[in-house]
Image (cartoon, rainbow, N blue to C red; front, side):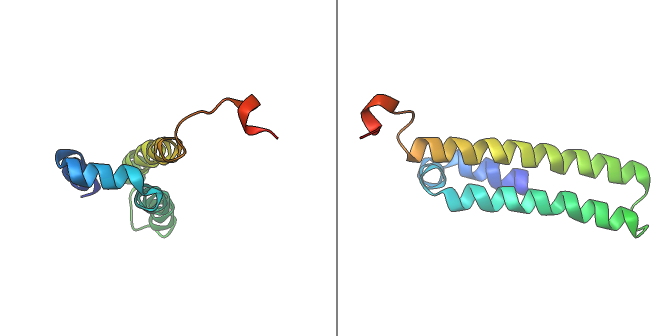
Length: 91
């Protein structure tokens, strides 16, 4: 489901620009993926998920969380105008 949402964001230039200009959207995706990793752990420990399913889902959601973390960093980087020289920013 989330992958489809990301594909829709990329497909529409206006939506993509809004996504890149507001860190809240990318951070929400990151938080969701981190919670899904924890949810898989919870379900596995309560014996709702078999070990193989747990490992597969955990891997997928961890990979999505890693990508989401990178996206948050890129959005913050872009929002702050990239890297500014340190010598010009210290008074």
